Image 1 (cartoon, rainbow, N blue to C red):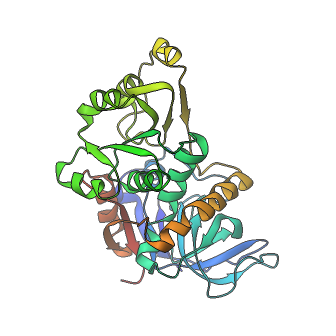
Image 2: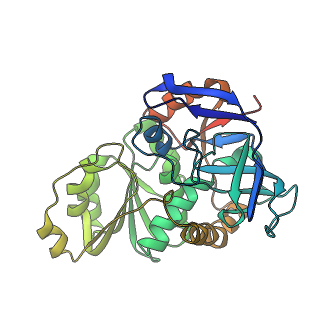
Length: 322
C-alpha cells in the first residue's frame, strides 16, 4: 500500500510517501481501499509532535478518517460485505490507500455520494454532530453560534443545526466566503460582530468554538442563560483567562471534546448516531459535503500548507490515485 508517514516531528520536511505491506484485518476490523483521504488539524498537531496517535494506531501514519470500499474483513466482522462503500473515523493510519478500521466505526455511504464527496464527510460531520447535538444538546428553535464556520467541521455544523430546526449564526473572517456559508443555512457575520448580534437575538444557546482562546471572552458575553460552549478547535490559541463570574452568572457550561482518544464503544456510539441522524440527510441532498482542494498524495506537503492557510471552504483531500 501507499502511505503517508512522519519521519519524526517538525514541519513538512518530515512528510514522506512510502510503500508498505497491506495490513491484514483481524477480529471485527474491515480493510478499506481508499482513493481520497481527508486532512485534519489533528494531523498538523501530530506532525509537530504535539498529538501522538493513541495506542493501537500506527505511530508514524497520520489520518483520523477513512472513506472507501471494503476489500477484506476479519473473521468476526459481520456488518459489511466485500464491495460495500463505507466512511468513518480511525485513531490513525488514515492517510493511506489501505486502511484498517473497526466495523462499528464506519457507516454505509449513500449511493448518491461519489467517492470525492464521501471522503469529505466522516471526521467533519461525526465531530460536528457529536459536539453540537449529542454533547451540547442543541434543540429546535435554539441559537447556535459557529465560530470559524467555513472549514470542514464548521460547514458541517451549520447544516446539521439548520436541518434540525435551530437558528444558526456563523462567524467567517474571509469576506469572500460568507455567501457560500449563508447558502448552507446560516446568518453569516464578521467575528467582531458576534456579541452584538447574538445578544440582539437573545443570546447563544450553544457556541461551537473552532478557533480557540481568542474567542473565549466574547463567547461568554454572547452566551444566553444556561448556554453551552463546546470547544473543538484551538488553532488560534490554547490558553485564555476565564471570567468565572460570567460563567456562573449565566449558569453556563464550558465543554471540551476530542474523538480520537475515546474508547472503542464511545467512538462507535458517535459514528452510529451520525449514521442515524446525518447520513439520511446526505442521501436526500439536504446536507452536502464541501471540498476545498484536492492534492495528489505525492504533494502531501502542499496539502498541509493549504490546510494551515486561511480562507478555506470545506475539506482538503489527498488523492492516492492521481
